[in-house]
Length: 72
Image (cartoon, rainbow, N blue to C red):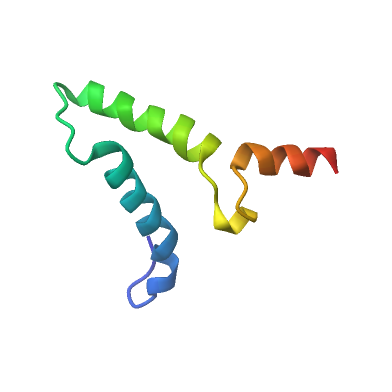
């Protein structure tokens, strides 16, 4: 994700992919690529983007953060 020698830009991507592997993919057997793609899509859209608390958002879910931003 970042240029050679700049490890700090990779931290967000590495954190996301670690979470996805541990919470979604690890230990699963997928019958087809399409099944795997659908599972990853559902994880990102439901668990990661909607429910998961993010430290960069003050430990709010993205939905709660957006709602707070829109109401202020």
